[in-house]
Image (cartoon, rainbow, N blue to C red; front, side):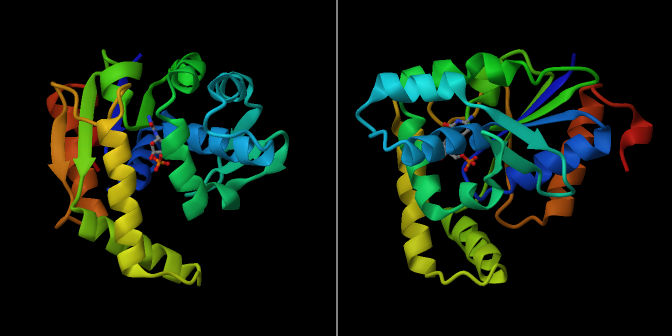
Length: 228
Ligand code: C5P
């Protein structure tokens, strides 16, 4: 069963690219970041503190979640409730990178992530897809962009949703989250040894997408006629 992994820091465009690629190929899609965000949200709902590692591990193992395909933004249900809007808030983003550093949370989510590998294939997006969760993936991409560019993209996104935002605050939050993700002891954010690193700072989504299709064809994961 072919697996393509797309790892990278937040705001690199990997979510958009991974979803578009999964739709293009007719494959399954795993947004592993959403699982860490759900653990964070669940902990917030149940007043579980970051020091309560065992409890957080249990929340990760027992998450009741469903992803319902819905255009470009799948609807996420937790305990039957639509939590899609809550998942992407800055407070959940920050807390998710804290819970993601806890080994019991990561191990609690491992089997759930691997279960997404089903016919006819999987596009998996996250931080450790190519290094830990799917080390034998057919193609591994590490998509990155400068912190300034990622903050600018996030700013634009939030402005479109008419949320009040401050660019320098966003940049600071992104740098803090990157630092936590890169320096944690377990599954830190880093490219797999066999990953293709793409810097999207000066590339549009369409250009990155074409580059990944080209790599897929080169590695014989897809045929030439699936290039466009
Ligand atoms: O990708 P996204 O920004 O939604 O991820 C939210 C957080 O979840 C990240 O900051 C990271 O700490 C964590 N994460 C992770 N491993 C993954 C995916 C996300 O640690 N595979």
